[in-house]
Image 1 (cartoon, rainbow, N blue to C red):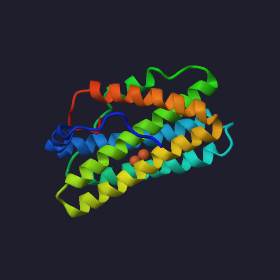
Image 2: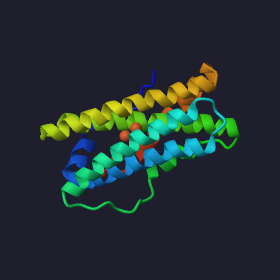
Image 3: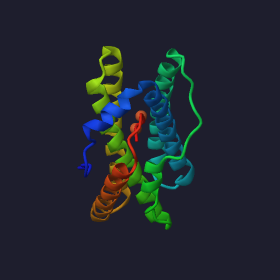
Image 4: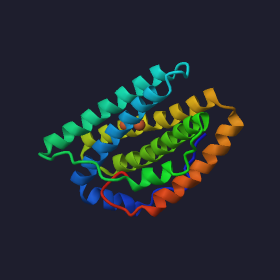
Length: 190
Ligand SMILES: [Fe+2]
Ligand SMILES: [Fe+2]
């Protein structure tokens, strides 16, 4: 239902895995931010039937991912870092509209395309890790992000007509393609 417009090139994987410690620290931050996105839906849209429960569940799941990645960070004797501006996410947020319904739909679709990219890239990482435990861990996280991609799109379809959702999704998929192409490769998820 949701197909990214551009695939991640192999060169990204080489850059990401070149400094796996840096990748892990960034990945931990991404999981923590995803959890915060879930809670921000809880705070902003208490009036949308069924949404709060789904978003609490989502936020808990992402928080659990954060905790698991954090444990890996700690085990390696590393430390979390303060957040840096995320150019990729900022580019995706730019076209988000301001009307109450429009903003809700756009934020759901932004979340969905971010999850789709996370799913793609974590699966790539999983398929190239040598350590079998770590590989299993990343494969499991990749699957979870795949479910999240569907979750946000399904929520959008629950609250808005299909044609409106799919047309706007197409626009965000192109914005995502431009954003992911624009940001330089580094040892980070994006
Ligand atoms: Fe996650
Ligand atoms: Fe996710």
